Length: 171
Image (cartoon, rainbow, N blue to C red; front, top):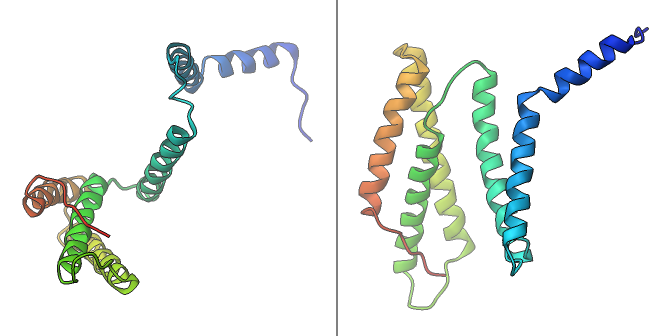
């Protein structure tokens, strides 16, 4: 049975809740959103298009964060998810671009080509993950060092492959 809180304990719990750092962050976020709404006279911030774009970006970041959260919960550290995502994104775009160049002008990519590009990209991402596992388990490098090294290498490789410019992929 849960004991009832005395009056002093209830006030103490309330004070701890008010002094929580996250609560201050919540108030700061609400203040910024309120300021934006106040200054946005044309109501562009709350337009349906902008809400859709924000939800899209939040969902992508959420998916990326889940992978990193699993690593952190397991007691590790991985500095390279952003670099891996960027590198594999460049690889996928280059594969799609290559497939598109092999087609007659104006013809869209087939679903098989798109699935093949995504499949190859996932295999490359898997290979990077296995390389991390090899560095950490077999060579006994600290995860911080191993993923920091691949972070720099993959960012550089992505820049070299993309020639530091956007990769356009037509339909």
